[in-house]
Image 1: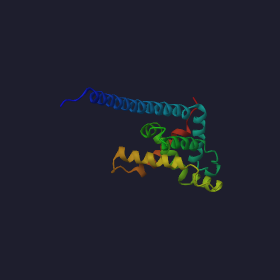
Image 2: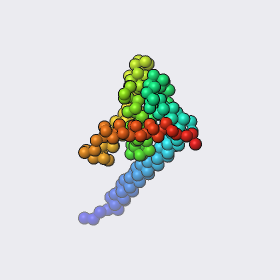
Image 3: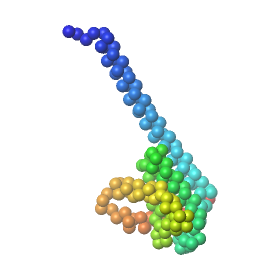
Image 4: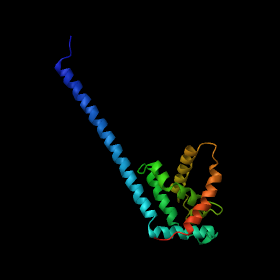
Length: 177
């Protein structure tokens, strides 16, 4: 008893259909990754623009000088809120975001939470506990990836404090270019 031509044709049709679906899935994944990479590069260009460099410089200077009461403009934090939201929703690739912004996310988030909790104050003033919640989530993600990349024996808390100080000093002398 052999395989008849109808059964063979049906099996071939199924094989082609499954192969087509697999190819389409692969194409969608590649397209998503490329779109994410392009979006991260675009966000990085925005972050490095003269206008944002001035904002980053002003914020870093205020944080270094301990002028926490003067920090009312949270545009840099709002930028990371957007990046966090896009990453959390799966639009942006987590590893690409970590590579492009990890140091700044850790530095600014830590500096805006300690020694004075500027973000907490903004939440209280507006009576909105969700202010900067995606930035907070992004900070947690960056910390998680840092732990994975650096290993369990690495002291992330100590490293973060050193990074904050170095990052703020670098940011405070930014030129708009």
